[in-house]
Length: 212
Ligand code: ADP
Image (cartoon, rainbow, N blue to C red; front, top):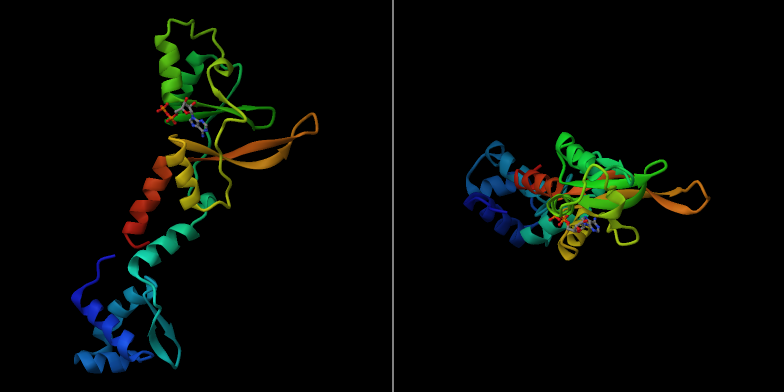
């Protein structure tokens, strides 16, 4: 986080003399309280300063990097996910390619029954099969997909930071967002309720950069 020279000076004053009121800071800088208002707002919103009514401003003791890290760790997957694009296991490779274009996604999730997770299909899974001389109108995606239990997934209440680490560690572009559900045979399954892709994370990154 980039601070202006005046914001740096305010930070120094508060570090040395806090708790200190806005009026006292303004006096030291020979400025009006109104002039300082936007700077104080930025410093408190970013978490570098804290303000207590009738006490004043004091330094939170957190570095700008720490503040950004805390923000990243506080955002939950459920707040930034997209709608999942799904097909069933017996869908042909051809239809899956069409679905990928129409739904404008790079990863399809393969589901059974009421949306229970069975597998994942990436762009290259489909491309490889298409180049491989198969009859893509006949070949079902169940033959080529990455299948459970090898699918890496996330949940709505996992932090975005932790889910992003999964994308990097496992070198995949997207994770299905799931919740537990009961299968027709009474066993436990995972219902697909969303999609977390690198795009969702990039969007959050841009929003954080804009100070939202
Ligand atoms: P691409 O293959 O287009 O580069 P990915 O990097 O996402 O896209 O996929 C690489 C491989 O990992 C593919 O074989 C795909 O089936 C598999 N894959 C994709 N997403 C997941 C996931 N969430 N869990 C497990 N495997 C996945």
